[in-house]
Amino acid sequence: MNNKKVILISVDGMRPDGFLNCKNAYIEQIMEKAYYTLDGKTILPSVTLPCHMSLFHSTTPERHGITTNIYLPMARPINGLFEQLKNAGKVCAMYYGWEPLRDVSRPGSLKFAEYINAYTEESADTSLTDSALARIRKSKPDFVFLYMVDTDEKGGHENGWMTDGYLKRISIAVDNIRRVIEECGDEYTVVITADHGGHDRTHGTDLPEDTTIPMFYIGEDFEAGKRFTGGSILDIIPTIAKIMDVLPADEWEGTSVI
Image (cartoon, rainbow, N blue to C red):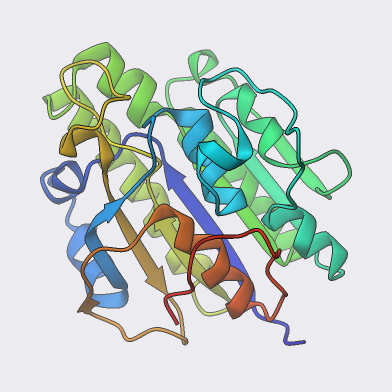
């Protein structure tokens, strides 16, 4: 087993065209550093908790059973990425701005975690990035999940997808991604994705605006500056497991991109 470490960043509701049009100069550097797609697909319904359950368990809602933002225990439990990493002796951390996401990991699978309510601060995403970076400096956890919610709640739902208010929130997320890459990119592989997109002031449908997501893989296992087509949100944790030389769960349905 190797000692490679990974940071996974999920930017809630970030459409690929929102990423491209947020007017942040660092987006070009991300694409120069990453093996990436701008036309990946999420699952249906394109809603936050079902999407993240599919992300972390590499199965569709038909298998894990979560179809709304209300968590229900799985009738036939599946180990997700956190559980597979813990079983392999890895240390995991999670920083998140939407409380229901606590259920993407089972009790006991996290060593470090912090939740910040998005509406208690001007930029919960920035505060969570501060906390994640402080923990990385102190403890060097093997896997860190950093979830940014302001893009969805304060951007898309409050202002509308592709409005100036939405694009501003994506630009702030990109600023925080830059901080993570610049500080941790030499020691960690950094994976960036979204759970879903959005249209008007909502999401959850099968419209391309809701279901198309970007994915970026930055690290020594990937060809920098190369764009690939397609890809699924289900492929992300099999890829991370392969990077970290950890066995996938038998039930995972996605395929590693390496």
